[in-house]
Image (cartoon, rainbow, N blue to C red; front, side, top):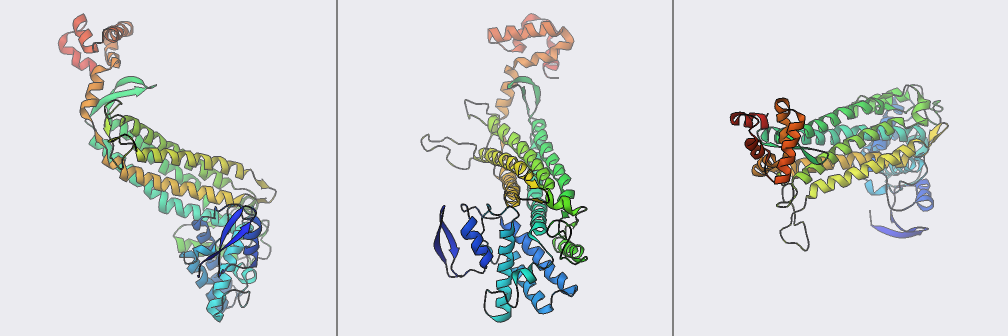
Length: 456
């Protein structure tokens, strides 16, 4: 490529490659419908390229495409799949709701590159035509939802799940490391009964473990592909063996067991699987937010906060206060969680955009769903490796909070009753003494039993 030229549209300047592989339909889409600079996710583009490569080889086997064109299209598609022409995919997220602009962008880039392979000259529609050959047996209405599902499943399995497993591993290790450190529990932001720091971290680890399990739920729906339905689900202009063969090819290539949609009309008219997956992603985001928020509060201080944890110092936390260290990673995770929750709301609204035989908000679904997956994957690894792995416990602070807590009287209830225990707590609070001191003075229980009662 030789660089970019600036072109004006109604909303400002867009960057257009000077020697574009994309063709006339894509160019018109960029000129007429480009809104802002938000582009389609590369995972989605690569999933479309995967479908095109599979379709070229399958159509050749079915006798619908000659070997020369098939090989050129498949080779060009593989280059796209490898990221070789990422700069050529210029269509924005806010385009036609079926994603036709992106589908044609991919068709035209592949056709142009295939023509260059065959003739030495890029572009054009001969000998490879973007519609007649690259898009043979397909419609944007079945390739785009299929690409969303393929990209989402691959991203969840290859990025998000491994990242969550890493976080679970690190949290579990901390749970074991802190298993002997007693601390005060807290409910309603008030002192509760003692527990161990290890138990607290075991709860965080279980949250993440359950998140991994939850991601397995929508997987079975996302692995259903709409391929073969073409325009409205009837399969018009597609060979009857096309979809099964392409999906089998994609399954072999990815190592994921994709299958043809049980009902093509549902698969194209609705995006319920994406909505479901987004809901699970939001749940995972909420779990990470809980962990991140607790960690930053437990590490607050260092001298005037809770201070039970020491968080790793990643960067100076203040531009004006020397020595101040902020909980950078937990705060970043909280922002990711907010973004994922917002993405889920948008996907919910997009899921309602299925009128009759087609959902017409698919590009935005693709963008938000894949962004949520990527953000959560990155956040989980950052939280694991740049925060949790380096956390240390302030044993002295944990012990001091236990001794000062009024909630210790809970252990006295079976022995002296609820009301008398409450009196002990109120006396301790009013006098500024500890429960142990008040209990010893009151002589309600033998001195040798006090430790066992206060530390059950």
